[in-house]
Image 1 (cartoon, rainbow, N blue to C red):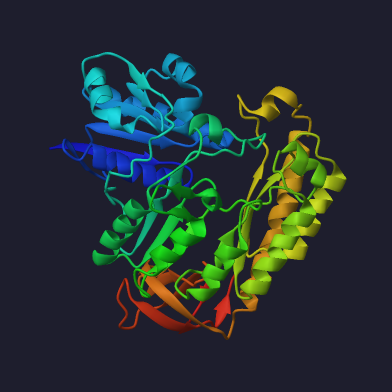
Image 2: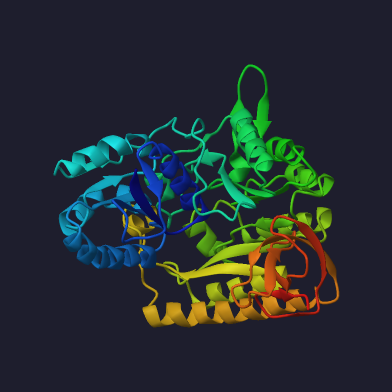
Length: 436
């Protein structure tokens, strides 16, 4: 059987997509971690940030030398970047043999066949129905304990800075029955934690003649499979996260008390320009409600520094919101223009690069402080942690995560991967809890 090497860049959604791709090609290819023995190399790309695209460009240049040594090697590009700049990529990257967008993975066997015959092939058609819900993903790079499950595809929000609605299409939700069946099979194979994935999981909705299912209903259904199965989800949009979901989380102990709730900016002026359709005040009200219903819930976020027209006052409002919320952690970026978005068409990228970097550094420094302060509060507390694997720093230690999604390092003792263990936190850093 031929060998397939997949490299995945970007978000958790892309990891889940790569597992679908591995399944579609499993009749002809088995996955390999070795680039040298591969007959087919696939790069599953992200187009949300400029740095992600630059990284892929560099990787394609690195692969050119490998292709010179192996003339039969086929190289394909998948995902959002493939959809966004397909013509440019095919013209400029001679290493590439074919391109497939996020909704075109079922056509991969045909695209590969065309590439092997010497024709440059591509399919970036966006679908209004494709969810891949009949395909059992191949968990080729899994620890066997945790798994990602895509519950929907696409996005309807059209934030002015974001390419996702253009590269992944409009929202469509999977049948809840297929999601539950996939989760049950994973649990029976030993998986003890699943993360339900969607660009905006809170807008998940399935309706037929039998029932209507929203995201809170789906989450509870998955949680009821077994108390030994932990349930996480990402990502939540502030405008859609419901009290109903929060009460489901409070009612079911195995639904982890952790919510990723991107704010992007603390300034109402910036939020309006970003088309986030909520205000600073509304966001803080949702945070207050989360903490009221789930007192021990950890909250993380996304923040963009230096969006079009951002002033020093706008930046200070972001810092003040961070302090008021006290985020456990954050994904922080400087703004980069994405062609095809409303921001690229209607706004001027007028914040100097040096200013963007300075503001980003201030955001990162503040978040390091907030993360450390949050972790210090956990010292002396007891947590139930799922053993996920061996620590990267010491083979005498395991690592896992608390229900609040904080990484915890603890001695191996007689524990096994996949077990739940009780640990007492003795010390911490800004990024890690430690049990000695």
